[in-house]
Amino acid sequence: MVPLSHCLILSATMFSIGVLGVLIRRNAIVVFMSIEIMLNAVNISLIAFDRYMNQHDGQIFSFMVIAVAAAEVSVGLAIVIAVFRNKPTVNLDEFNLMKW
Image (cartoon, rainbow, N blue to C red; front, side, top):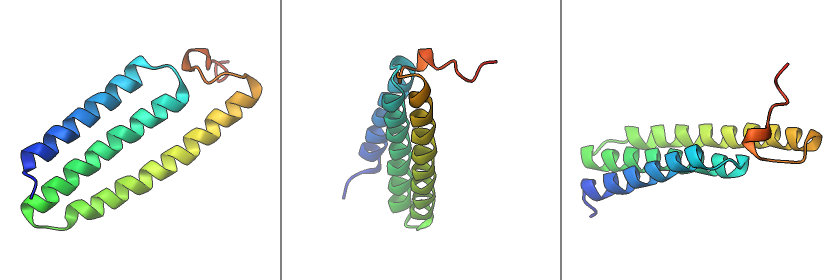
């Protein structure tokens, strides 16, 4: 059995990598992937605490996070594709189409 501390270290490392990806990168697809990494890090910590406490609430919340992540990806990629049709770039610095 894997100790709780190892799971939390993995989760914190993955979350930190995701935050750095969101803050540093400017490509919209990479930013979405970084957000997915952060959500997966939360899932790891939920499941780790679930096993540590011998309950099943963490798995239920993990499924909810997966559902929200799937919805976020579908809506986010639809927006990126719609903007890409008008302006052929996925660089977030150049997404000023929604300004008046």
